[in-house]
Image (cartoon, rainbow, N blue to C red; front, side, top):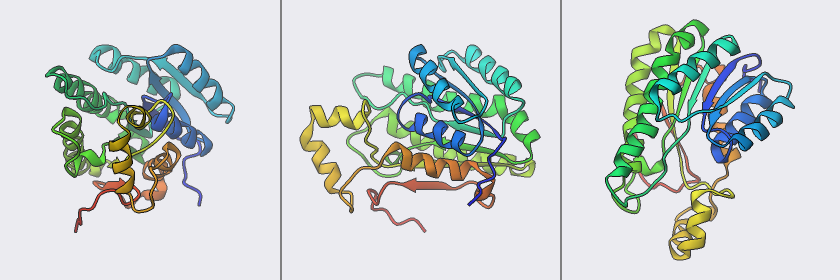
Length: 253
C-alpha cells in the first residue's frame, strides 16, 4: 500500500530512542522529510545521520519542551525550514513516577502542555497542508487502571479527551487528529527493561496478562503511527487507537 507520505513534512518530538526513534525511521522510509527534537546531542547526531541515509531532508535539534518559548520557536523554525508541516506527532513524555507532587507538574508540562503548544503552534501549517494530520501518543494506562494512581496515567487520559475535541474543532480545515494508546512496549533502555531488572515479579505478571505472551516493540507502534499520520487513513479522525497485543480487557462500543 502506498501511504502517500512521500514528500510530506513531519515533525516528531522525542525521537532519538524507543518509540519516537522508530516513528521517525518509519516516516523517513515512507519518503517523508523529518524535523525532530530530543535532549541528547550525540543521539540527535546519530539519528540525523541514519535518517538522511534514507534520502530525505532531516532537521534535528536539542530542545527542552518544558521551555515553552524555546519549544514554540523551534517548532516554527523547523516548519519554515522544512517548507511546511503536514504531520505532527506528539510523542515525548515524562514517564511514570509517584514519589511527590513534582510528578504532576512534570507530566502536565511535558505530556500535556508540550502537546497543546505543539498543536497550536503548528496548526496554521497543518491547515495549509490540506491533509494535515496530528497523532498524539497516549497510553493504555489512560484507559484502564494500572499499578497505582499516577500523574502519568491521568495526564495521558487528558490527552485522549484533548485529541477528540481538537479533531472536532479543526476537521473543517482538513486537519485530522487521532490518539494512540500503546500497551507495554519493551526496548533496550526503556521503562520495561528497567522494571524487568528491578521488579521481575511485576514484569512477569504483566507479560502473563498479554494473550500472546509478549510485549510489543517500538517498530510495531511506529507502523500504526505512520498509518494514522498518512493520507491512507483519511477516514480516521477523533479516534483513539489501542495497540496493545490484547493487554487491555475492556470492551468499547
